[in-house]
Image 1 (cartoon, rainbow, N blue to C red):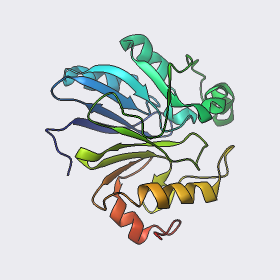
Image 2 (cartoon, rainbow, N blue to C red):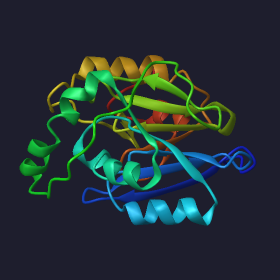
Image 3 (tube, rainbow, N blue to C red):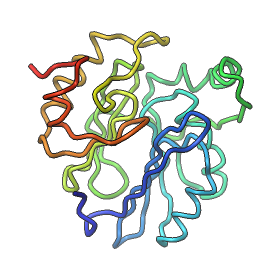
Length: 214
């Protein structure tokens, strides 16, 4: 269970492909970050206002369209910076083509303000970036160790893993990321997946049929 004294946490499926978007806020400083705003920016802004939070950074687990489409709107409304791993910039640059492929309206995006790097501290709640490539070259997860929370994006799902047949995907790489980075975390860490229900590190180590623990 999350420590409510350590963070304000809200999560909901957003956008046309129901990407899980997370809001993480510091209950003391009121600084907040948003992870993967793929749509429904009004819900995000309402939650920030409800909890008295100031959005300072918009961060992304990767740059597929369903995880990024509301980023520009949020930046415009809040002044928050946009951060992405540099190895996913080729996907960010092709968001229009991604939208066309899925028959979705194209929303122009500004360039990222910052690059995310492995082991980089996040803007609040003692979060840290973990580079977990495989679904895409620049896929990252965000660990909030004190709160026993990992936001894994499309790297790991409940009893499944992210697809590796999209451009830049690689099964051997995602397997290594999961086994060597995620499965080495405490088993009681809650994993917020990119889509669908949350899980735990321990449950995936025991039950995930796609990537077994070593």
